[in-house]
Structure formats: structure tokens, C-alpha cells
Image (tube, rainbow, N blue to C red):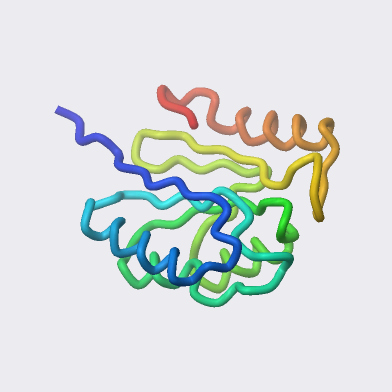
Length: 135
């Protein structure tokens, strides 16, 4: 029997390091395999401290995408700093699951057009389309 992949997906932390810490503790307690941070990690490009680190300290695999409260550059910086993966316009295979993503939104502080969003999603999907499971 194949072990199920346990994912904790969270968005809109907006720099709340206490919330991130509590979620990291829950991820450890619940034996989560993968943490997906789905954008708006910061509040207007500030409050980057303590958002990804608590998950990494609990030895959790972290992937993220930027929201419309941080730039792609900030998301990439945080991913590199903590050994996480930025899925913006990218894809990965984790165990037997293909994951792809596009961050941002067509509203808010850091906007993408709908055409840009579609193209980034298409590009990421194309790389993992042969996976039996895709998210």
C-alpha cells in the first residue's frame, strides 16, 4: 500500500511569525510531508523574519509561491535563504506527485496580467503533465 502524501497548504501569513511557528508545530505533530506556502507571505515586502524558518527547523520540505504582497524576487530570495523551492512558473516532482505553480494575482500591489498567469501555469504544467498526480 502506498503511503499517502500529507500536505499542509497555507496562504496569507502576511508576516505573522507567531502563526508560522504554530503551523510549523502542527506540521511536526501531524507528521506533514510537505508544506506549501501559497503567497502573501509578507505584508507589503516587510515582515520576512520567522515565516519559513520555523518549518525548516522542523525538517519540513517547503515549497512556496509569491502572492501579491511580495515580489517574485523576494520569494526567490526567501526560497534560496531557507533551501525551499519557489514554484512560480516552475514545477517539481515530490515523491509520486507533480506540483506546479504561479504566484501573484491580477489585483493588488504586485500584479500579473491574466495572460502572464496563464503562460506561467501552462509552462509549469507542461513539465509535470505525465505525472499520475498533479497539483
